[in-house]
Image (cartoon, rainbow, N blue to C red):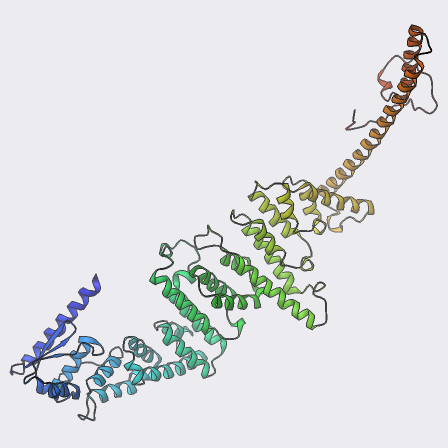
Length: 576
């Protein structure tokens, strides 16, 4: 509401000032000039003396006496017409870098040129442009900014191109030889421009051979100023972000971002990776064109070895930090990097499966740490988690400890998973590539599937049998104690198996005796034979009783050299 009131006050002041110097002529006015909502009472002979356009309007009209002229489409509106009218009346006014372009366009519109009158308004404004406004970078940029509302006339008069050429040349000079502090002050000056004019200056700088880092510096400053809420705000607490996606503001930001991405120099390493990640997050948030997102993904992929976990997290979560973005961009970035490394390996005549460069190791470590950070998100499905983990070749990981940590965090954050789903999550890591500390932790981790725990125990047992324990853990009492406990547990399992076999043999022997006894019952006397039979079976079972040391009555037991009557071995976890 403040803008219309401000414009009304400006019109009132303009008409009041005009009335003061017009009525001072002591001659009655004979024409009313309408410019928008403003009406100016003026004299025809004063206007016709300088403006060929007004002269032709008066001469070409069919009316006998013209008393009203409409000039609502004059560049600059009522304010510029007021100054042009002052010039016609010989009243002094100030020409500045802010109004010189509008005055030049108004003079062209009113045909106030030297062709019609010497030293007219057009030549006055041209002199000011050449001698004052276009002698400095700041002046050229202010004039260029004022031309945004003067199209297409400002373009036809070559004002825009002159400003662009001078601004581009002086920006290159300032980039190489700064005239004041801070050295990149000129990049802040460029931020006042519309993106279309900014693009023209960048093109002019490239044509003059400006370095990629110089262009990048200007683009970064312009982007952070133009898309401040989206690029520079990393907290996610800015309430202005709660704007509908289809609003005019979001559409303008989307067009602005896409224009900026087209300006990026070909050298992909010219921009910090954090800035590129912020741009890509903004492109995802604004639903920018696929070409815009693909260009940013390729640039990030080319320098992925320099990425940090925080940079990847910028791409993953929304500005409020609560919702997880579609991780397809992250997958394409990692996949693109691996394809690049594969091409390099093939070019060098090697096998990609055997190649493990330093860059790949760094990326693998970053990806595993990144998985640990996003694993807590409830929106992260198993397929998305595994899809990112398997992009890194197994050879790029010397140990799977970081990946195991990410898997454990995922299982902890998703307790509703069944055994098959947990096995699917754990399938991305190799239990045999865990360090000793990680294997010890895995053997006691109740969240892991049984199969993974058995793999970890089995690997430790192989180490114990071969005597090839880790040298780095040889002096750790806790690790040795755990190893000894595992060895004891395995020994107990073997003893239980031996005991189970002995009991099975005894049951089979008793079954055979019972079968023989039943077949001989028909030929023997009932009571005598029964007594003889039971005493015989009792004596026989006594020979095979493994618990006979617990009985004090040993009078009826026959000595057997094959049976050991010494104190038996103590058996743990016996099976009855």
